[in-house]
Length: 83
Image (cartoon, rainbow, N blue to C red):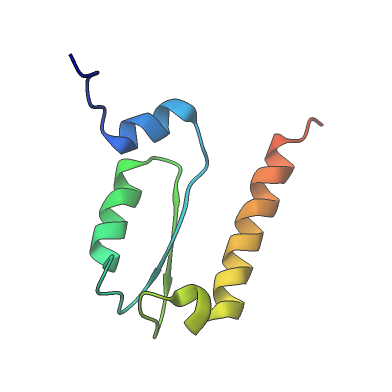
């Protein structure tokens, strides 16, 4: 038979993969309330709402999106380095 289906949030939790959610305030494809729900299912995940943006926050508000993504990557990189 088919292997058991494990909910994605449980699979992500098991891997301990850092997660940063970035969503546009007016995103109608993956709305902020849906992304906030996903964020709530992953303790330790981060959530950032890009004001005055739709689904393409990475393009509509590129500077803000890039700053959030870069800060996240730098912080997880620093946390992974031994003291």
